[in-house]
Amino acid sequence: MTAGPSLYRRHRPRTFADVVGQEHVVRTLRNAVEQGKVHHAYLFVGSRGTGKTSMAKMLAACLNCEHGPTVEPCGRCESCVAIANATSLDVIEMDAASNNSVDDIRELRESVQFAPVSGRSKVYILDEAHMLSSQAWNAFLKTLEEPPPHTIFVLATTEAQKVLPTVVDRCHRFDFARPTVEQIATVVTRVAAAESIEIAPDALVYVADREVMRLRVFRQDGTPVREIQMRNPVCGLYIDSHQQLWIATGADGQFMKLDWNGNVLGYGGRRGTGVGETNEAHMLAVAPNGDVYVADSVGRRVLKFASP
Ligand SMILES: Nc1ncnc2c1ncn2[C@@H]1O[C@H](COP(=O)(O)OP(=O)(O)O)[C@@H](O)[C@H]1O
Ligand SMILES: [Mg+2]
Ligand SMILES: [Zn+2]
Image 1 (cartoon, rainbow, N blue to C red):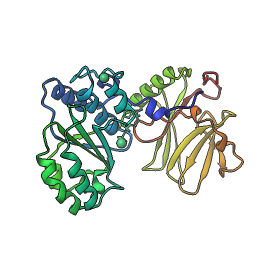
Image 2: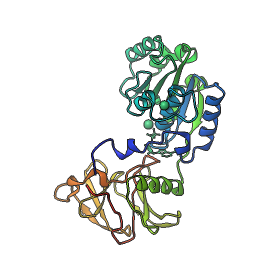
Image 3: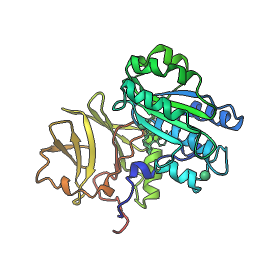
Image 4: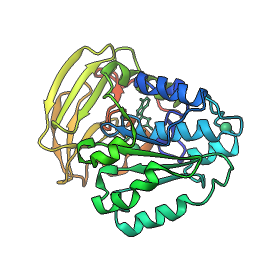
């Protein structure tokens, strides 16, 4: 399979129609774009991988698509492509975890004064918003409250309770729900189809629950098959070149070996397992809930990868 952007980026939903679940967010944002009533500050709250960044970029594309403002950004114009590739000068993604000083905020405040290059909207996506210090927020409150025209802030956080109430109050808040297994299966099926990977109808869906260190195995209709308690949080799920399924767990670099029925075969270190040689394209880690999952057939090799 060809190298290129990761599955994660390649299959980021680009239009509202691609979003699975999160109906209330989609409905409200659609209406806002259609009626030209987009708020100047949003707070997106939800677990990792529920679609916060995707939604923020989508909103930016709706506003800045050359054929817009539109609720169906074309995905092909210069602006849409730049937003998808994170090179748009008008869509600024900032990680508050590493840019949380008062100086960073001062810089941000200065940048906000410049009009959008496209002449349309300037969208600031502030990830991990709870990581900003209160001094930093205080330096920023005024800007957040009354930004220059055509400036939109999207704050994203996994921990809303750690964001200053004065900040939350100034934002239109959306809570992103964790997807159901059926919704995860929908995404798996779509990605598999787009990647020419064949998934048998009886394939299992693996859902790695980081927070409770648990791996859940389901059929595609959502029927639970089994649960495996993990010793460490799951951080990755791989299929190696021998079609062996491995779960990578936690900081100790340990890998758990599973058969395709979801049975634990044993544990192994990174070295000598073949995981290091894993073709990244064999990893079906699209993770709508920030977790990692894969689908394959029960006990048989039915995943067909496109020829290299
Ligand atoms: N609601 C969703 N519908 C479809 N795919 C989703 C959804 N949420 C997440 N994904 C998938 O998960 C990936 C990560 O989503 P992302 O928007 O970066 O989540 P977050 O910013 O909340 O951590 C996306 O590229 C996409 O493939
Ligand atoms: Mg994100
Ligand atoms: Zn476009």
